[in-house]
Image (tube, rainbow, N blue to C red; front, side, top):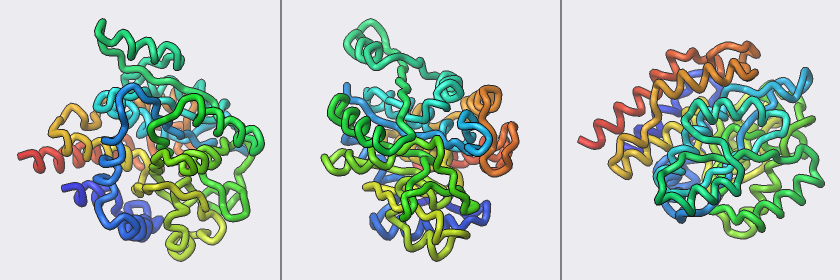
Length: 324
């Protein structure tokens, strides 16, 4: 059933050659991508921080405060589920310019946004009652500062895993490119340095991406160059231990949650349609736009709210069939 979850979110619905990237990523691990993600998540001990890097400054040439609807929603749901099934403390890392617009999405997912200190208190006093907490911190958009902060975060917070969702990765020339092949480096968090530091010290890293220009796509760089339009330019050089591909990165996160539900035989871990509606509305009201169209409407990569909800229901159907 894990392969079915993979395949469902990797059909090339939007004609961006995700099927080729999925094939390359699958060959790298030799098994289901979502199952491999579950196996990594299962190693996360209780009471440990887990970093989730997301947020894409999609119209940096206009203002760095405009983020896209793909990424934050899937991150919020996956962070919530990892919190619930591993008793870990999720920490969202994003551009400082996107923090204000990301917080409403986290709240719409059912997470209480707190400081790291408050999150620790929630852990230490959990006998008084469970709290679905999340932290959010800015990550630098300048190389030198990003290198310093990456080392500090790894040393001081010692995360059990680093998970990047729809997070742009550096190309071979050190710049960041959108799917049209345009350089959109200014104002973009240099999370690549965090991933590199984590890998250097043996912290597991997972990436979810859909286009070829995201962190993690360095693992399938040749496939990106061969099959994706402008692939020679946009291909990210940054690798992670595991790359989970999907036609829409949010869907990749939902597929991982579905795999966790299947593995744990717990349907409460499945993403929920009502949460999707609430999050997408919150995202648009807070200033996000569809990264594909540039419109402030309840769509993700050109797919309607109804289509996104249908994907969640299909993932749910696969899991329910698998649990019979």
